[in-house]
Image (cartoon, rainbow, N blue to C red; front, side):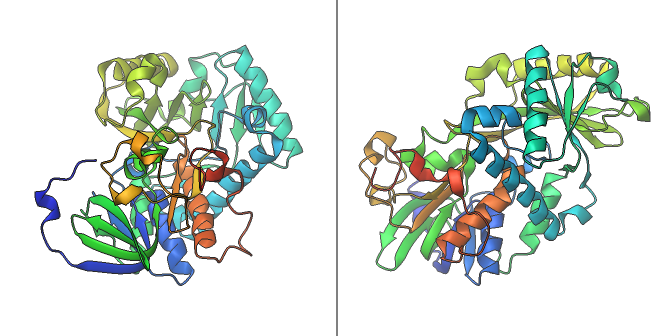
Length: 414
């Protein structure tokens, strides 16, 4: 983060609120709406526009789950945590429906389909299906399909989640923003978080924000605002492209939201004449560990080659873009109170920030969704806000295994 001396000189007044929400993506909008529903005055601060970051740049998958597959989640987190995250993703979709997302033109029911790229992944998906059914999650294993994805590749097996959806991400964000009773403070870059006697003072290029509490909902950019967390919430670029599929016959168009090779590639129909495709980070893993938004030749070429392989033909590319995800060490989101950056100086080095005081509940984070922000973010931040404002007693299972305290170095007092 870098803000010029001159940008800080203009006197633009002071905004007051109970809760300041930093970021206007799916998580930030969800935070403000949750606070609003709880009777708490919330104000969003966003340096760009609504949906400027990854929330407006993703593939529009509203799918169940939070890992490569359920068996992998059970292996890595244990049965209880895996079940919690899958239930959370179901609650997230229900929350989106309750807000009217299913009525949007770009939202529709679309089964997600996890394609096994090899026999080892096929065994994982078979194990996943057995575990999911035991835990009450409906799913189906299939070995054939009737679109181009199946006609041109031999997939050993696939796991279908029948109740998933797809969406136009910007439509969703616009809908949520329209439900806010207080307009976001847009174009206000944050350059300081200071402790105050009655809460916090946030310094932005649009003026000061005086609040009792604040929550950082910037996902991949969390480490820029809370330097202590820059090794826990790590940016990873995800590149995509859109293909003109008007030359395909209708029966060739992808009928599911496909997710292949442990989620490394993902492909779906965007509309009746467009196919969306993303992934191929493994082609250049080191270069993709970045917050830079440029697309790159190696990844884009790999995506085009993959499209030819899976669809059986070369289709014209109409759009290329990228978004920035946030990965965490254990693959789970990070939620909870954190220490206020020392002296409120967001230009400090992460090493210097390690001496920050203990968290006192004034500053929270909700970040690190590992590529599943649309599927987890709204419900996760709703639970975080309810706990933050002391209204969580009767509102579900809380944030459970996502608590920041699990990382000793960033835990309160750590």
